[in-house]
Each structure stands twice: as C-alpha cells, then as structure tokens.
Length: 241
Image (cartoon, rainbow, N blue to C red; front, side):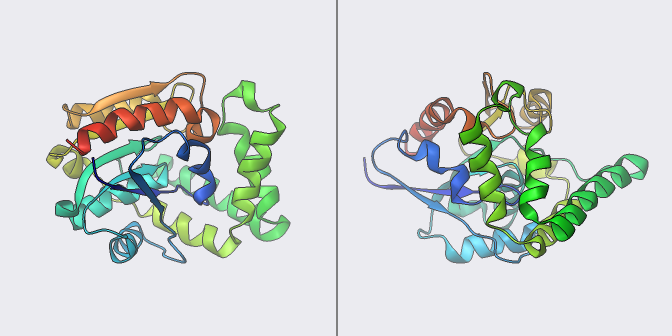
C-alpha cells in the first residue's frame, strides 16, 4: 500500500494538539497533515484555504467538531478531491431560528467576552468543564493540554471562528450526496454533539459507519486516543481500497 494523505481539520480554537495523541496509533503509510484556518471567519473560507494548502490532490479528510463542518464545506466545494470523510463530534444543522439560535449566539459571545477581558486561558478553563467526560475533570494533564491548546490562539481568532459557526449552513445536502467511505464518530458522553445527533446524520448518509467512543466526551481524540485511532484505522482501510 502506498502513502495515503490524511487531512486533519481541528475544531474551534484547536490545533495539531487535538490530533497529536492519536498519531502514533495510525496505520503505517498514513501521512497526516493538520490544517490551520488562520483568521478565516467563514466555514467556506476555511475550506478554500484547506483546498489551496493540502499537500496532495486527493486525500482522506477527518474533521473534529467545527472541523467536521469545514469538512462538509470542503465536500461542497471539491468532492472530487476527497477519498473518504470522517466527521467526529460534530453536527450538520444550521443555527436554530428564534430564541434557541439567539441563546447559542449569546453563550458563544459570553465566552468571547471572557477571552477578551480575562484572557483566552481563563475562557478555556470554563469551556473545558463541559467538553470532557466528567470522570476526566480531575485529570490534570488532559485538562492542561486542552486549556494550553486554546491559549495558543488569540481572542481575535476566537471571534472569527464564532462568526463562522454562527453563520453555518445546513449540510444535509452534503450528507445525502456522500459517495465515499464515511465515518461518523463521537464520544458516548459528548453533551455538545451527542450520539443522537450523529444518528440523525447517519439517517441522511445510510452507508456511513457510526462509531461511539466509550467513556469520552466532546474531546474524544484527546480523551481516548487509541480507541479513536482504531476507528479511524478501520475507516482508512476502506478509503485506500
């Protein structure tokens, strides 16, 4: 088997740190490449940047959280370049209309105010409380890894990415059109992007495999790296077939 390029798309305020724990568990011949969205303030612009910078013409792509949204925009723009897609701890629907959508915007902007007034690290210490399995909140090394990753980004980056997420499109059409090996994956205790949300996505893409990672929250790639990598390995075998 030759080298297979795997484009890795981080989520909100994340970077290569979210993927680093699982890289050693990926199969031989996998060439991982982690995207950086810079100051892009729309999912479409993020996807265009990935397409311009990706190190291969065709590649498998895995997106975590907001990165899953970017992956679906990438598929909207250039499906011919994608050999397979893994959508992890993510969702496909636009921001809700009415009060629910307003509440989402208010919560995101409240965190942005903390980042601007108290620093990104202070914001991350609040944010992480709901993003890992409750049992891992006392895992000092894990919590520090997540908080430090966020702290590497600025409040201006946070503002740009919040703007992108609040303007997200409905990706139902992308899921219905998928014709490549597809993995839907999430932590069993992901309270932000729960298993039921991924089951709804599978209903639109019935050929997709749904893997639920036990004893993990939203940050499953960092919480349960070996299990997440095993799931990705099974999927990668199909994209290379």
